[in-house]
Image 1 (cartoon, rainbow, N blue to C red):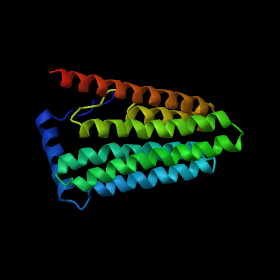
Image 2 (cartoon, rainbow, N blue to C red):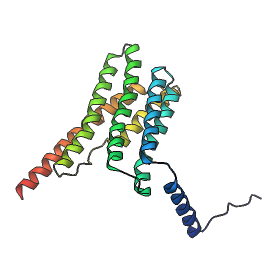
Image 3 (tube, one colour):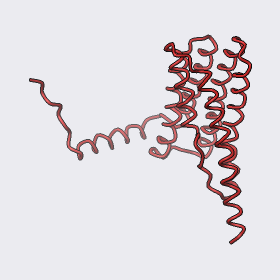
Image 4 (cartoon, rainbow, N blue to C red):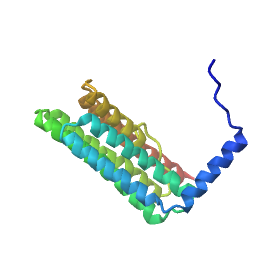
Length: 204
């Protein structure tokens, strides 16, 4: 008869969690180091995709993207965050997505898929505009997190396309078309949202 797993009481789990948190804070690990690690992995992903190692490229992109989600949380948890770190994180996020999509565009170009190459260009441009519209709106005092395809959604779509294609199900082209379409819709949603909010504010 199998022995049931030992369930630690919530208080004990909290002690271990706090101990791990303190160890991380006392370590030399910085949010910038996590950001740069994620960036390096995404560059590796781009190179692997360019070399048609799509599954490995997809895995590297997933791990690199996970690092991008961890750096912000670690920054808040450890208190080691800086304004430059936040700037660096946002900047690298834009580059990472573009590097991998550029490698995907090379594959499509080699296969003579001009339409898919065009979709990649639209996806890159629209993804940059999704970030820009939020930054510009916040500079005007308008919170702008609306839209169906923020970066997390776009990462999931591209990751799924890479991994499934690497496993033999050729959906990379479809994922790029979906990514481009949703990113464009998100830009339009944000433009409309900002217009609505500024019009409402002017009417008060």
